[in-house]
Image (cartoon, rainbow, N blue to C red):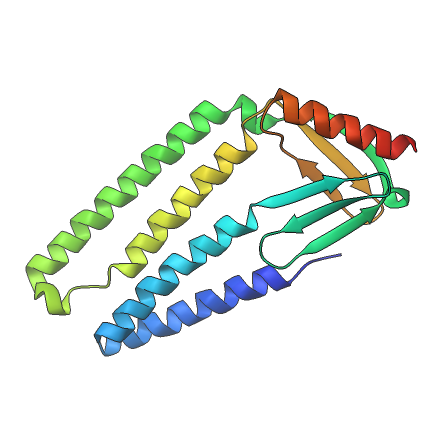
Length: 189
């Protein structure tokens, strides 16, 4: 089962961003600039919202609610296995996050330098759009946030169902024990 609503929203926003960027490049107005900046901010916000889930476990099913569109339920009959696994993101979080921070800093400095040079060369009215460079930086910041979310605890919980595999990344020991205990009770019933 593949969920296509969220990628369709992101593809639509990205296509609209590219079209509006082309229009802004050909005919600069305040409204096209505002539209590009707004869309360049909206896409990382959608990515951020995609990463937040609410999980509830009761004696009949597991319910996963996405903050955008999805509300999925997995009955206990469809759950085949619940296991604990080592979190590789936790193991490599320091070098990965360090390299990502360095990349964000490098890209930000390059974008600031390029924007400054464009303003000095062409003037403020004809300079390049700030929306697209900020889009790159926001996506990299989102990647850093997702890496942080998935690397907070050294163990993950893997749930195998008949049609999907789900990996849960608990925040701490208490959340891990609570989720594992409830899922084990659900599977044993």
